[in-house]
Length: 212
Picture 1 (cartoon, rainbow, N blue to C red):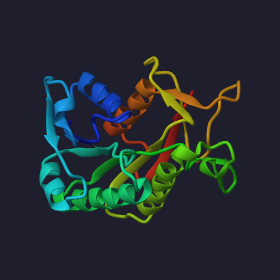
Picture 2 (picture 1 turned 180 degrees about the horizontal axis):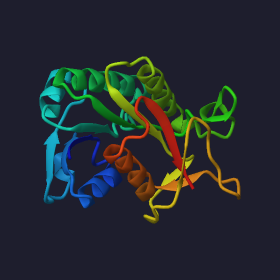
Picture 3 (picture 1 turned 135 degrees about the vertical axis):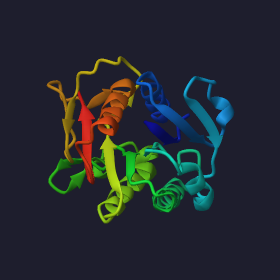
C-alpha cells in the first residue's frame, strides 16, 4: 500500500514506520524535520506543517491510507495545538479524497471503571494530562465523523521500546491489565496491531486497544 504517515519521526510514529516498511509498504513520512529520517527504500520524507490544511491535502493525495501519529508534545499549548492539528488532518483527508484514516490514540481515554477514564484517576501523570485530554477530545470528534473510514488505536498504560513478539490482546474501551495487574505493550507490538488493522480492517469507525 501507499501510506502517508504523519509524525513518522516521533516516539510511536518511528515504530510504525519500521513496521510498515518491513512489510513492503511505500511510506510518505510527513514530518517537521525530514533530515531526522535515514534514507531508505520505499520511503519519502517530506517537510510538513500539519496546520496548513491546503498543503497537507496536496501531500496526502494519491495515498491509499493515512496514519496519524501526530502529537503536540513539543508545543506550549499541547491540548490546543493537538486539536487544531487533528482537525486540519481530518479536513485534509476529505479534501484529498482519502477515506481511510488510522489514528494513534492514548491510554488516558480508556475506562478503568464505567464512565471513569484513566486520565481522571489520581495516579495518572500530570505531565501527560494535556495530551491525554487531546486524544480523548479527538476520539469524541471521530465518533461524530460519518464520511471517513477511521480507526483509533489506544495502547496500554505503559508503552515503551521492547520486543516484537506478535503476541498480545486486542480490546475495546476498557484498560486491559495482565495477571500481575500491569497494563503494558511494546512499541513494536503496538506497531504490529496498527499495521495489521491497516492491512485487514476489523475496527472501522471504532476505537480499539492493545495490551499484553
